[in-house]
Image 1 (cartoon, rainbow, N blue to C red):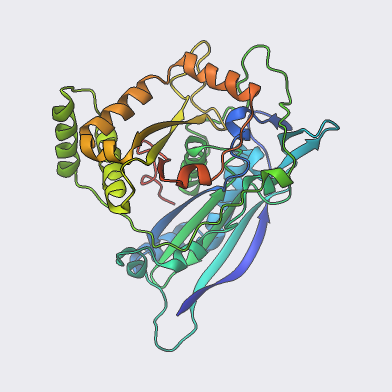
Image 2 (cartoon, rainbow, N blue to C red):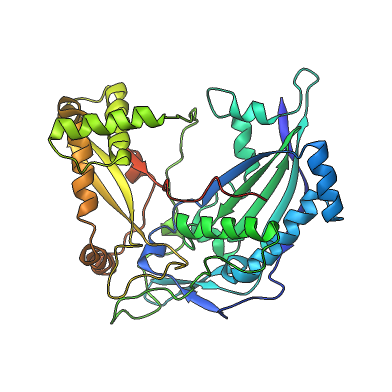
Length: 395
């Protein structure tokens, strides 16, 4: 049995903030709806440098890999000062609350950890031990900081924490970022830039834009009718096995062709066909009664959808809202992948600029916080995006 042991925890602050000066950022409905949920957690796994690579690295720098990553992390924060801050909260006399990002430079966490062998039977963990098993090893969860922390805890906990875990032959960089502060696009913009800084860049390819978008006439700060206690999510996920599935290009092309052929259209995308295939497969295996409703939730981004004005490319913050497709289990299984994919296609096509503004209008009239039970009662949900640059990061 192996366990993760922390060697050091460093509070990293911005040293010389670059670009747009910002002290306070108001949260939008896109941000506020996520306060009760957990953070974004993504990890990158690397093999350690070969002896020749290590020798070349030592010629170019006198620091260790750990110190180099910590230093480049600090420089990256200079361009993203909100991530070194905390959430601020104002609790009003009318039992409402308002939240904002307090760019107070309280700091982000950088943790250096190792995997220790606590028995004489099992060797220390290797990259292969992470990648090769059918199911995700439970120890992988220990490669991430701030596990189980809801986003509203950002009033006292870091909005960003990174854990560098040393394996026998590799490094795992586990990053946790408060989801009420960023969405996947902003998350990966920071990680991409950190890797650029680590490789020696001194400029940012996509500068963050910290001005939050609010429709004309919306007053700030936005007050929500919830106390901190009411924000607590009572859903506790059961202990389940996790598995990563890989689909070949040929398999995905076949699914897309099948879905379009079944519905007599050519508009269903590869992703829609794949998600529909997953939905039908899961419902079939769950043995749900044919009359029960099943739901698939898609998190739709307003980036590229909002018009007049459009969101800038480097918009920093959340831009997502959920849209759900519902069916009875029997109807879903009877009509199959093609019909499910077509319904997803139509639901996504409806997400126009007007629909984005309508989401805001409805949410402001009746604020709702997303809770996990909304996604788990006979439901599936999709987050993240294949468009994010996850695999181009080289530190």
